[in-house]
Amino acid sequence: MRVHNFAAGPAALPLEVLERAQSELTDFNGLGMSVMEISHRSKDFVAVAAESEALLRELLGVPDNYAVLFLQGGATGQFAAIPLNLTAPGDQVDYINTGAWSTKAIAEARKFAEVNVIADEQASNYSTTPAADTLRVTDGAAYLHYTANETIGGVEFGYLPEAGDVPLVADLSSTIMSRPLDVSKFGLFYAGAQKNLGPSGITVVIVRDDLLGRARPQTPSVLDYAVMAGADSMLNTPPTFGWYLLGLNLQWVRDTGGVTAMAERNQRKAETLYAAIDGLDFYSNPVETRSRSWMNVPFLLADSSLDQEFLTQAYAAGLTNLEGHRSVGGLRASIYNATSQESVDALVAFLKEFERTHA
Ligand code: PMP
Image 1: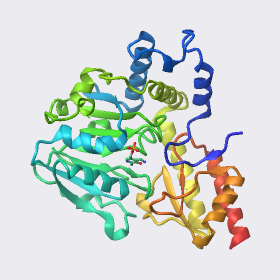
Image 2: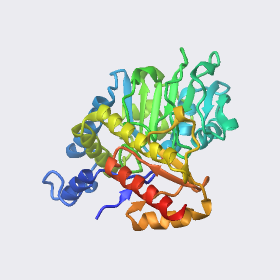
Image 3: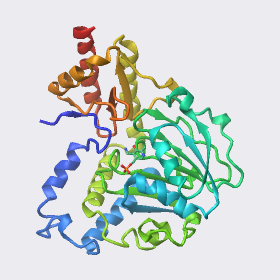
Image 4: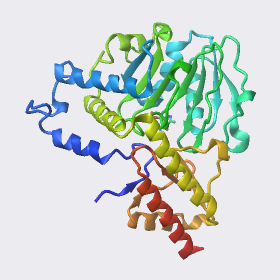
């Protein structure tokens, strides 16, 4: 029996993907070996890697003048790789701070560059995104970085920040593949795979060609975009199983309608859940309506002393991973692509029942 999984990441994967991996686990492509047991340079694995990249390009509509990289070190590795690749010492960079992940990206960038925080939503306790027309990008900044979806705070940009000639750089870790994206508006975006792309251990970076080849000389080779692009992301041994699973997951996205269908389903799931939270007295979501995330829905009980009982009873009802991030507490339901409307409906039924029996 599969549970209703609301994990924030690593997160639920589609059952079809897991079953396909299971069916191929001991004998991939009739080789008598698993995909984990063959060289990353073998023709069978190179085909897996190429197909994953082609699918990613097709699903997101990535133009030819962008490189698609499959790296290690997580999104956190990119917090450092971005300034290392895109700045020289003393350069200015702009960041928008909408919460915990932006804050971490900013702290890392400060090791390498002069960071201007051009908007900081601290006054709202990070429950908002800045109004689009208030953003003032610094002349000559090497890039503008923002976190499109704050996984902990459940705050998502409903628009693309306008950066003019300054390259727009985005952390899409918890929103990539959830809705269509105009890739041409970005200089670079990146995502740890463990929410909407696949398992943890692999990180996707999509970067415009003209931003390649600018890395500082001391940049580690595995973080140097031009080096990794030149080596087809195989300068060293890549996480082969994760790359393979990512490819299976992208096939599932394609076969179930692509990003447009994902967006329709995700919007409906999010609307269902927010309507329940808003409509019941016992629950609240702190995020301003226009910045509510489609992927991560934090919520509070009117009586927080019931949090543990809520989690215990939810678990008994087959609803798992509903605790809020350890840094903020409360509750959170993450509803990525692989979490179905049926799971959201089951959660809503549970919210109603818990209120009825505890209010
Ligand atoms: N950015 C965002 C928006 C995230 O949600 C996370 C992880 N939850 C990270 C960055 C850090 O990712 P990683 O653990 O892959 O380094």
